Amino acid sequence: MKLRRYRSLSLSSTKLLLCSIAVTGLLTVCGPATADPTDPTKIVIKDFNFAPTPLTVKVGSTVTWTNTDDEPHTAVSDTGLFKSGGMDTNESFSFKFDKPGTYHYTCSIHPRMVGTIIVQ
Amino acid sequence: MSDELLLSRRNALKCMAFGGAGTLFVLSGGVLAPLDLAKAATDTPGAAKLGKPLFVQISDTHIGFNKDANPDVNSTLSQTIDLVNGMAEQPALIIHTGDITHLSKPAEFDLAQQLFSRLRTTEMHTVPGEHDTTDATVTEYFNRFGKASNNKGYYSFDHAGVHFIALINVLQFKPGGLGTLGAEQLAWVAADLKGRSSSTPIVVFAHMPLWTIYEPWGWGTGDADQLMSQLRRFGSVTVLNGHIHQIVQKTEGNITFHTARATSYPQPAAGVGSGPGPLKVPSDQLASMLGVTSISVLKHPSSLALKDTALA
Image (tube, rainbow over all chains, first blue to last red; front, side):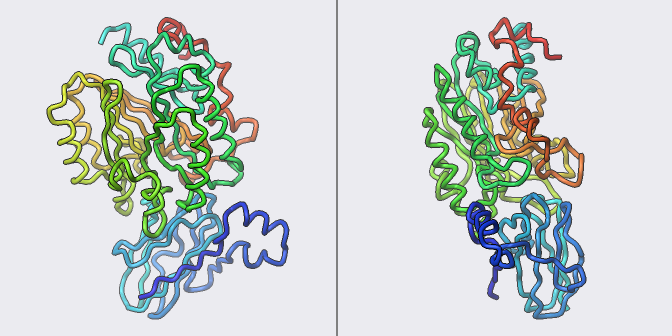
């Protein structure tokens, strides 16, 4: 299974800041990823919680986590299936679930933060 | 330990409560005394009375952080480095207790190393924080700082008769749990301490606290008790951590625990708010929470003045 990372901010923070200030047109590229709570494949990280959890999706769905906290978070599968890397504020990570099952994950920076994805 | 020494040590601990950009540890009669770095840096004769400057602890530099709680962590680290460099007698070692970077990015590590290179004291020992190990392959930290431990994250060394033990407790998180040392590392510590005289002063340092400060936020290490049981026979044990961006201390027998302030940004006290994120404070208060302006707060720290310092 291919791990796909959609890091919305691959630039360094400094470059990003300059980018945001200098080139308004790039804001859609560099700006916050929009987390839509009604989208069944979106998980929002807010106030040190993953929501919604558990999240139920269909086989083949790509799930996207977006961090809205000032503190970075990660989403790391308990089985090692996926590992997001540190998501800074408004950064996202996506992973495509090809097989049905129940997937538990945690934030490796704040291990009390746990979540579950049910793939049907 | 004499009452006088105990008292001095206790007062030295209180001394830390006023913070500093870092903490200076001096060795006196086999006992390590922590001193506020900002104070010690400006009062070398007073600090020298306590003993020889052995090392400075800095922590949680979080290079790469740029939010409101401190938009310029490079600058506050640089101020810390200036304080260390300004000391008339340089400490032999620098110990960094982790979270060198905010997001484990190569550019963050590179910038941190560039900033550290200004330190006059060139021997630096580090342990990683969980912010240093979030890259997918967990290699960025070890590529730069892994040599001393052969990429294991734990190692020991001796300096000035003191035995130093660097430990890693940020790699084996269990969901909902605390940091973990793990059986392999604990067995290594047992072997490392075996045959060592109980009169050897011991310094243990790791990123996450090696005692449970606040479990709901993961402020502790689940199997630290197994470490402490190995350390209890020693007459002078100093356990250093970072992670929580504020000073918390306790003493258990001959074991003294310290968590250090960050050079980057403060965090809330245990359980206050939704989680242990950056604490936004008015900009005129930030420096005091990092300790960089605490120079004029205390009387001169000397072995006698410590007892006189009105802190309680």
